[in-house]
Length: 329
Image 1 (cartoon, rainbow, N blue to C red):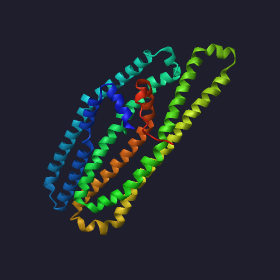
Image 2 (cartoon, one colour):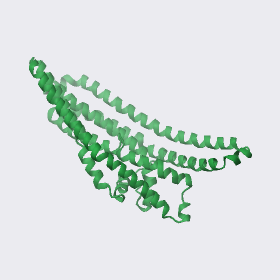
Image 3 (tube, rainbow, N blue to C red):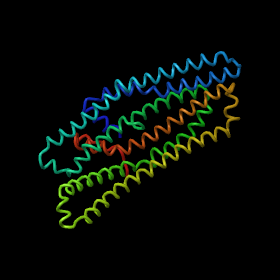
Image 4 (cartoon, rainbow, N blue to C red):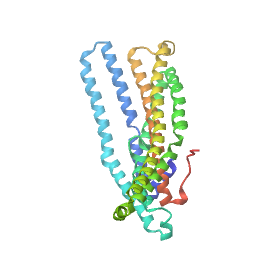
């Protein structure tokens, strides 16, 4: 699925900048989790020993670390991410427009005018969303890094709780991210193609509005426009329904994990945890695993929603390189 998006980056000679931005941003969630877990553990230990004098210095230390972490992330955004994002859209629009202008009249007629308009605007925006918008590829990789490192920390701290988390996460992850959401690209592509038909239909309406009024064609135009609009709505709603089910199962798996933890806590965790402070630290990493899994699920859903636009852009800029990597049958 990501292969075509990476090909687009490579065609624009922007793959190195994107990988650099990805590497610089990937550790953010885990570092934030590391600060939070140790801060909570430290505060609980200080309260247990009633060391009130150390509370304020400890708070200031963790506040400083948090500020530095977010300052780092904002610096990456302001100096690198935004510029790469703008440059990517600029180059991609230029590439698609260049492909359009270099075609013969016969090649131009492969796509209707409305289809060209959709590819030059809506599809390019969705390709950008696929790669860099919130809850898409970039954030999926950040969440995956957090999931991996938080899992390692939880294994080292309490292997029993890690097993509980995995028993809950894996089945629901497979159900939502592989089974339920697999047809989302099919519906999204149909919606994009219907949107292209809508653009193709609207252009002559605007140009010929006087003729439509003279020949009393308003009802026909309204019916045609309504039919295309309803088709776009139907396709998008089918995709939304599947994504909504994935959100439900993500939330359900998180709640079920806490219930299972409460039911088995005495036998599976009690012997391996020395004190309440350690327990808070352990559950913090377990929470990070669940949060990262939910984020990855949501990212996969949104990426699949935007992926048809990646294919549609590839069909124009590099028709021989389109990789059919998703089965939706």
